[in-house]
Image (cartoon, rainbow, N blue to C red):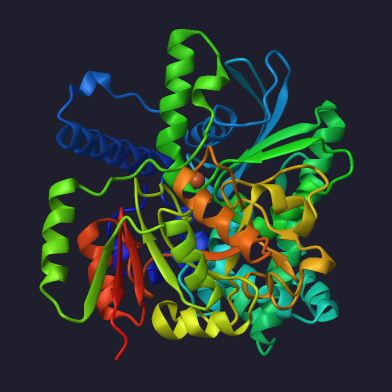
Length: 503
Ligand SMILES: [Fe+2]
């Protein structure tokens, strides 16, 4: 784990070059080991204190094993007794930055790994830093910027990244192309991309990442003849790269752990320990059916908040209105509606319980949402939630991925471009869809179903419920506070519809 100083100041971690690499090489391995074990001990103390448990109950699972276990044990494309290929790829963890494994029943057999110095993820995060954004957080903004690049220039510029990192001869691991570690590549990138336009740099790193990932996965399929894959680790948060991987002709099925960065490690570690200590494997129990694993709205808190709102003259409150009709009509009129119901989503994506929804068939709605609440970077697209029975009418999904957790970008069908224009990327017409089924989220499905049938739509635009720069809303108090402080007019809070009176 990084020390707390990382959170205060990123620069010492990123602004390093060859000279620092040479200097750091001189630090003895003994000292590094000592530091590693000291941090490990500190972590044990933290966990013991936080959970009030006996230290003997704590065990460690290696970083990439936990990434893969999170993907493998929650996957929806497992057939019992049939081997599946597992990939992990991230910045780095426990000395590695990528692995390839064969998973079967409760065994995960690693066949190849990549050293942390030859890290694909680290190149991406350093480009993120170089373009003035926050590494480990804003990589998605680089991905969103990439389709605006000039393709020819981006391909040309990507060569500067291929100069740093390549695939091994058998294609199953990444290798440094020079003696410069990706940990220390910041100044190389600065020199290499001096005076190259920002969007073309984004295009270059995205192209490079896509190309190397697709070749890596292809090589592993060829080597093992296993055509079903599961993926974990932060690099697989790159939904555009996932779109290209799933298109590999010889690939049969693909599952990506939702929110595959390090937030998924605890799930992987727990599942790995569980299946191995029990010596059993029944993936049906571990399979991820929904991600509503967060906190609920507490009844007493809700009552208090409602009482507070009732005393204000500028709000109307309706209890149990016919939500499906009322919300559908509001959406159709171009209104933006916030939803705060049930348990909050775990992970990086809002999926309907702490979400803002609006009609998807309008480009101008993007501006409205941004001015009311989101203030999203001007190049970033919004994403749609699509009704299950309409999915195949509007999304190109030959591998039948039907993503429930927004882990893939997919192209929209030409006939649906207009209808989904508020929730697709304006440049390449792809989108990061969430398919909505009744069994995933009954209440959200019900609103969506009525709206889509009544107004002949495929779905709605759906984004996280938060003011720009703030964390996603969690409880009733935060929901009402966000309503008050933003230009939003309507909030569904459990069984109540709170609306601002128009002035
Ligand atoms: Fe990781």
